[in-house]
Picture (cartoon, rainbow, N blue to C red):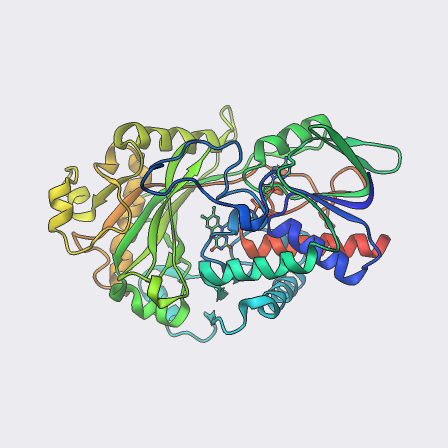
Amino acid sequence: MKYDVIIVGAGPGGIYSAYELITKNPELKIAVFEAGNELAKRKCPIDGDKVKSCINCKTCSIMSGFGGAGAFSDGKYNITNDFGGTLYEYIGKEKAIELMEYVDSINMANGGEGTKLYSTAGTSFKKKCIENKLTLLDASVRHLGTDKNYVVLENLYNKLKDKIDFFFMTPINSVRKTEGGYEVVYDGGSADAEYCIISVGRSGSKWMQTVCEELEIPTESNRVDLGVRVELPAVVFEGITDELYEGKIVYRTQKFEDRVRTFCMNPHGSVVNENTNGIITVNGHSYEDPALQTDNTNFALLVSKHFSFPFKNSNEYGESISRLSNMLGGGVIVQRFGDLERGRRSTVQRILEGSVTPTLKATPGDLSLVLPKRILDGIIEMIYALDKIAPGTANDDTLLYGVEVKFYNMEVKVDNNLESVHKGLYVIGDGSGVTHSLSHASASGVHVARRILDKA
Ligand SMILES: Cc1cc2nc3c(=O)[nH]c(=O)nc-3n(C[C@H](O)[C@H](O)[C@H](O)COP(=O)(O)OP(=O)(O)OC[C@H]3O[C@@H](n4cnc5c(N)ncnc54)[C@H](O)[C@@H]3O)c2cc1C
């Protein structure tokens, strides 16, 4: 099989590369290889009845398939250079924002119209944060919601499917350099193209490492983010979420001068389990549809750790701590803030008596037995700092779920075109370590598509 461009991975990075290429040059022959299923067939077997917990499917329907890791996400498109990746370091701040806005316009034209774009521009909240030793990061946030995000992906797939060859349930085993470009090899076959875009996300991180070793592409270790997910009555954070939807707030701890930050805020949302390679961690999401919303708001509080020498596998550190929480709690642990402060575990009874009804069934326990003291101290300090701008945050009944972990891929060495040391081989999205969000990953896809269009 001979193509002009082969794309490995159909997450946002791969989808927007494909979209841009075929829209601007319909003559191009493009193939997309995806380890997971097409969107309509992505079904997690956990039904809470017959299948209660993860059965470790060969391909995880939550993380893999058309739409990638973000398919069932909250669909928050953050248009900013302040977080979500370091794309701007490669292509410049102005260009990065322009591409994120371009992606937003495509989403709006494909089912996202009518969704709200929130912005920190001109908010008085910024001053209130500074007065309380907190920093509010600048961003515009398009909240598609889990439901509309799915509709956008469905529409994009319907537009692309007759113009591009999609190969689902076809993980690529290896990428080889040939005289005229690249050959990708899968079980039972192979395909060739002049250009190859690799966009394999977090789930493809181990495979990406092998490809880099085989093709001698330099890499660098990355950080891991560790912390808890906070759940409280939505009314406590309404001042922030009504205006901004999501406030990305950073706090520098007094004790260690560590940075603690809020992440993935879900007004009226639900706390959910996340399965990363068999380890159960916690996450959150919320729906655009009011009928599916709850009375609670949740967000993560995270601290970054980056190891370099002699131990340099930051992700392994995060995995070990998550495993410890799974060992003690059989999964995710939940604790009342008041119990944590009093140095005692939470119990079913104490949680039942509390004023916050948990949206996730987790095991009441003691997070101080899991998270390192330095990280936990930072989180507690930040909860008190947040209490000053959102009174009620440090309430005894506020729930903390642990652990929340954000793993990052190693950074693959790429140039300003996101092209590796091998001409015509591009590495984009979360798999490159350059991005870690829907907006940055999608923008990186458009960027390489345009570089290829310039040459093809
Ligand atoms: C529960 C959850 C909620 C999230 N919510 C948000 C949010 O609200 N806002 C936000 O900005 N970000 C969010 N994120 C992060 C966001 O989903 C990712 O940053 C984004 O999906 C990265 O896009 P990507 O294309 O780089 O990789 P991915 O989306 O991970 O896609 C990579 C694809 O490559 C495929 N693949 C892997 N290896 C191979 C191989 N060898 N051969 C073929 N295919 C392969 C995978 O199956 C996958 O489908 C969330 C993530 C999760 C898990």
